[in-house]
Each structure stands twice: as C-alpha cells, then as structure tokens.
Length: 184
Image (spheres, rainbow, N blue to C red):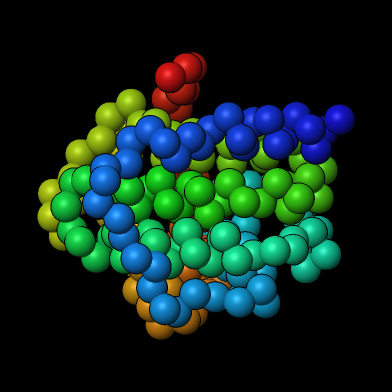
C-alpha cells in the first residue's frame, strides 16, 4: 500500500509536458552508471537534513538510466545560465529524483518521505523564483545558487557522492522553507 501511495505522490509531482519550452537540451556525455547513481543517492541522503537512518540503498534501486539522463540534462541546462534554463534545471533534477520510487519504498520513515516529496514539489512548482545570472537562484525565497553550483561542478568532476550531497542540501533548503505547495 505504501509503495502505491509513494508512486502516486511522486508521479503527481512531475508532469513534463508543462513548463518546458520547445528548446531541447542534450544530455552530457558524463552520465553516471548504476554504481555511481548509488553514490549520488548516498550523498543526497547525507545532504538532506533528517535524523533518519537509511537502509542499504544498493538493494533498493535498479534501472538508473533515466536518472543518469536527467542529471546530465540538468547539467547541460544549467550551463546555459538563463532564467528559463535554471527553471529547466530544477525540473530535470526533480525528474531524476522522481525515478526513485523503489528506493523511497525502502525507507520506513514516512515523515522523511513527505519532506522529500515536498521538496520535489517545490522544485517543480515554486511559488516564487528569482534568478540573476551566475549570482543568485532563489526558490521560495531560499537561496540555493551556491549549493546547486557546487553540485554541478561535482557532477562534471564525476564526484558522484558530493554531487548528491549538494543536491540533497538544495532539497533540504527548499523543502525547509515552510512554504507549503497546496495545489497547482
């Protein structure tokens, strides 16, 4: 039952037919493999502000191709340094994280799942968004530019766990904004 609930929650967050322009971004050629995606997730969990102890993630995840592709698309989009590409970057990151329903089902702490879901929802549908090229990126009045910039640098350096850590920090900052997204 919980798996169905989680699949519904995560699936309801992201609708890629909305919010994307016709301009397509090509994925970076540095897509991580399955083991490297596990490192990203491990870092992500460390970056999220939570007291939960997470289980071994290796057994929870399979089929990481779509995750890798979306992380690569996020990097490519981020490099464009426009407000539109910053919005797309957030959506690609949320889409990559949206591919974790089996992983999320492995976590018995539902409070933490709801925080991750809330952060994903904010990435997809921010109530406020501001962008100043190479200086500032605020989502719901929370500054995440430096953390997102660090994540992108670590992705390019293939330091997967560090990439995940800073991505988790971004999710934690946005999810901890106290701003609830009720509907869209």
